[in-house]
Length: 388
Ligand code: EPS
Image 1 (cartoon, rainbow, N blue to C red):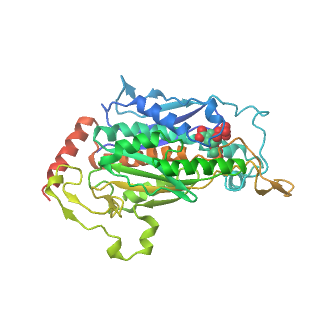
Image 2 (image 1 turned 135 degrees about the vertical axis):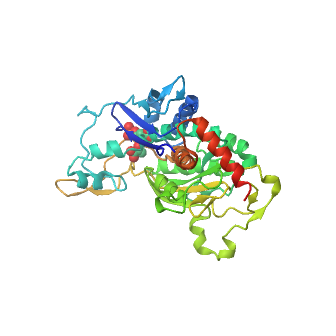
């Protein structure tokens, strides 16, 4: 087995570039560079975004790890240039001394012992998610090679929440509906309400968050592990999603609603359907999917379902009660150019972050130095698992 799949990002919001280094992919995997750039473009979109997205046109430049478009087994380095690069310009990036409630400003200044929030906010900025989307989108090439599809969308915000059902057989039309929505919501009735809500927040100089959801289809059973807590895939997914800027909660499947029901109304009955034996559930199907495809920290062959809650953006045009560093006088918090809502973008980030964790778990189980070995390992596992 090869090294675990992992990635690191570097880059400040107004530095020269955002960078991702991805390590642990097998050799001979064709990377879908167009898909990486498509995901980067999707992350830039959405109703309610600020002026920064009009300046940038995020594009992935592969600096290492590929030969003629295929992995060679070495670390992959991706660079996304920042057009609005001005971090060393003291006039255009003046000190920020009125910390914004909800942002990293106060905690970062106290941690790094500085009365200027600028350094912390440059790195804490959600601009960094461009690098994370690039890493996830690179890992998606592996998932695509094994027929695993990842679908992320906005479920809703405030009192506008969709009850739309996400099924594999309607996935293509859901993708089309999501991609024609300004807020990545495939439910036309809720899409219009979300646009109104974001518009209202804008006129009130306020901000709005929301709920993002990701469904993964085609995962074989057995990804993740119940043997060590850090290998539980539900734990890894929660860790990764909570690591996205502004996320305050993560749920798997029925999530927090599990606490409101008896066991008989939570646990998904097990049914064997020989007609499905060649699908990734190997014939072991479930009439419901309250577990969100994960039991004991392992995939069970059903779609993986993860929901994340994004708080409203913490930069409000009208400001929020804060304190001036130095004088400690009460003031309104600083205003920095920002978004009214970035929930559509967050759904793209979450989709790619989840994709990366699924790819990580896939290679933990089936990994090898080359795609040849990964394919052989996967095929031999499926043959054996169908005998169970
Ligand atoms: C973002 C870039 C940032 C912000 C936003 C997301 O650019 P700038 O600060 O130059 O306008 O628009 O960041 C935040 C919401 C935040 O809190 O930092 C991006 O590319 O996604």
